[in-house]
Length: 116
Image (spheres, rainbow, N blue to C red):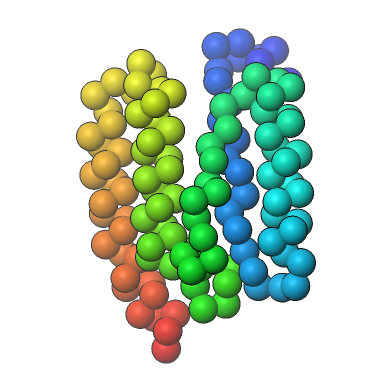
């Protein structure tokens, strides 16, 4: 296990993001997320909650995130870091904001290409 090799390492798991590209996928995602919650609790791991990413935040095929969904996912990661990891990242959070903002600018370009 990772903690045996690196006892100071803290593991973070992200819950699956909703998807609706095939019938029954939402139920499967919910089921896996319950497993992840139990796993994180059992092994005392951090868990990032993405329940606030809604179906309307998915692209046309309902599999990948659209721009709004990517923004929300990025915000979830930033919130998690701010709440749980401030001591481990310190003033580097500004760099995280900068990288997230740069990547969000590229999202519009990707969506334009995917819409063709």
